[in-house]
Length: 221
Image (cartoon, rainbow, N blue to C red; front, side, top):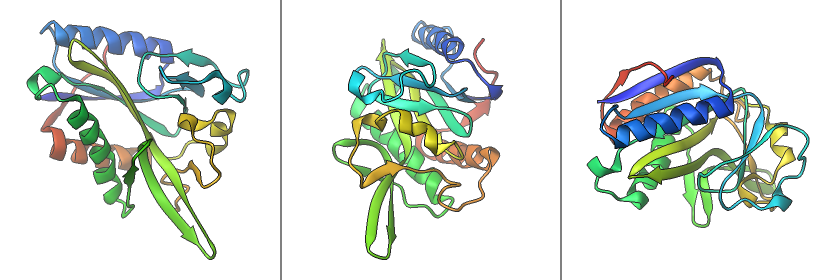
């Protein structure tokens, strides 16, 4: 059974990455169970392996961390639910493409619990929400996905916008996408009075429908 851990308060990014990588290594060695770890970080920017320096628009605004996950620049901060997913793909067909698709559908399924239609787009990683008004339309990203595998065990994961300060995204070009018809949103920005606990419940129920049963666990040390 997959462990499901939730940290309270804000978790230091470097501390979290070290704990996540240690847990992934233990899973690969057969010394620990799979784990999904939910947390929030203080405000910061992270750069994936495809990040371009020109997409960091405000380098002195928040701490910037270079990371080995896939993708480009993204923001983490309070009100955003980060889920680090440590899954052993040796037990799940060793299919990376399918795994990423399952992560996308995990978020889409959770959004459906709030009557929000999440969608994926070719060439634009993450989960998007279409928004329309009189004479205008746009697509806003509500969740980012960036994972890495080592010895077929995944780490890093998703960043799901519940109620972060969306202005903080202005310090980067999120995921390298700068066209004006694309932006970022959150559940609360969409007008939904969703708490982090509400989001966590939807994420856990959706995760279990896609990946299997979970059991409450302690966050990695």
